[in-house]
Length: 132
Image (cartoon, rainbow, N blue to C red; front, side):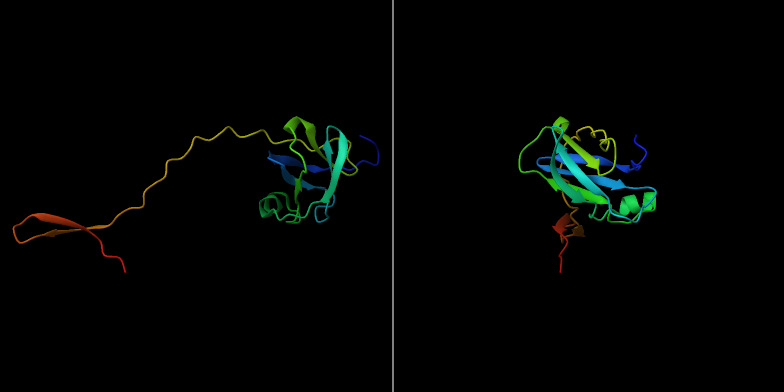
């Protein structure tokens, strides 16, 4: 790392479709925005600032809550072609490991309230509960 390079903390959390998002802070200046450069195959493709609200990161890191970023690409790119470099850093932000795919969740039917009553013959009669 060069003498004037600053230390950054953050991750590229998601590269879904044409959207690249994550968060980044400077631990020595946690209340300041960070300028970022999006690299596609090593070539600068876009610049941006950390300005998306991330209260989860702010609570954990003690930084300004607007420490998130998102880039929307004009083209579809492979994850391996995408890097996010904080301006002044010697290395791009690391990626969070991809979460394993989740199994589809079966829809859950809402509960049905039933009124049980005895009719004149002594049989149990079930009727849906009358909702207002």
